[in-house]
Length: 119
Image (cartoon, rainbow, N blue to C red):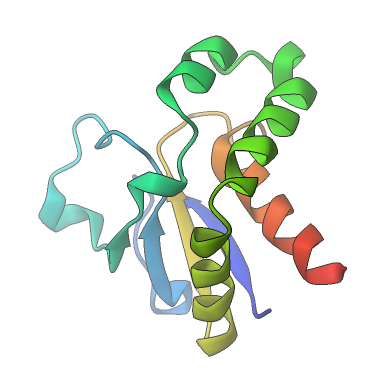
């Protein structure tokens, strides 16, 4: 698998981003579609609304959130394989809206992609 980067959707787009994929179920607040500079909006790979609400971006819940999110992702191997294929073709940047750059679903998604790739 090639390089998978992470970036807030609110940060400026750069050529080095490669393919820009929004991995949020809901459109980011205050962001105009034309300003996002997306190549793809992959809503289906985002955590379920129930899991997102349970987590509430609480760092204390991070380990359990990652476990539950991995379980959800395991039900959609097609989405993970699609992301792996895209990353093989060139850099991919997973875009997220959360303020917390360390505890968000894009971080967990990238870890899941990397773990599956190392097996």
